[in-house]
Length: 69
Ligand SMILES: [Zn+2]
Image (tube, rainbow, N blue to C red; front, side):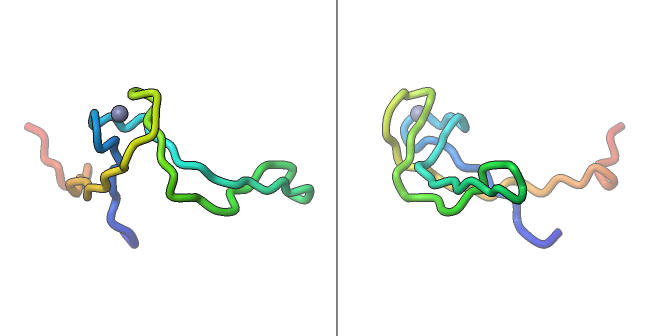
């Protein structure tokens, strides 16, 4: 696992239904919008307004080693 998985939540209500302002550039070669950059301005869809985002590290879950039952 190369990167540590994180969760990003709303600083006000804790929802994960959050977004940030960004630019997407049209790629004619790929025939799709490609994310160019992400800005600091954050929004929570649950709060329906601007918010501050909180990043937290997710607990590591390894299904192969989980050992249920
Ligand atoms: Zn919120």
